[in-house]
Amino acid sequence: MKRILALFAIVALLGVASPASAWHWSSSDITVGNTNSAYVKNSVDTTASTGGNDANGGNGGGGFGNDGGNGGFIATGEAAALSAVENVVNTNDTKVKTTCGCRGDVTVGNSNRAMVKNYVDTTAKTGYNDANGGNGGGGFGNDGGNGGMIFSGSAGAGSGVANLVNSNITRIRR
Image (cartoon, rainbow, N blue to C red; front, side, top):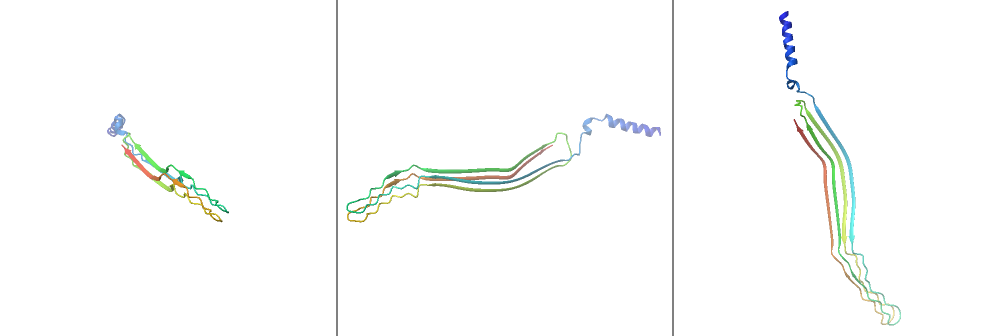
């Protein structure tokens, strides 16, 4: 009996006297959960215009020798329109770093749901210009005016849409 008690005492002493590093291993589990939901709606309307100009000649009047006036002169610059839309939606950047030497499971769950709607209308125009001559009025020798002159610059339009949706980056270091 004394030998059995002595053996238990030695085993207990070895357990207490062991280095701490031998007992730091853990079986703890690490769980990370990311849940995202988004609804994004972009309505963008960009317009540049030098159009819609009138340089019409006048109408001749009633009677004799009533001529209409000539149209004017219109010179416009350039029209440019640019639309840009960028959406970054539901991004998870998960970093798990264990320095304890844990041997448990590391579980990372990402759940993303997104609806992205982009309505982009980009317009540049120099059109819809009128340079019409006038009508000759009633009577003899009534002339309508000459049409005007319209010089319009160039029109340019550009649109860009970029969507980065539901991206997950996960790093686990032990």
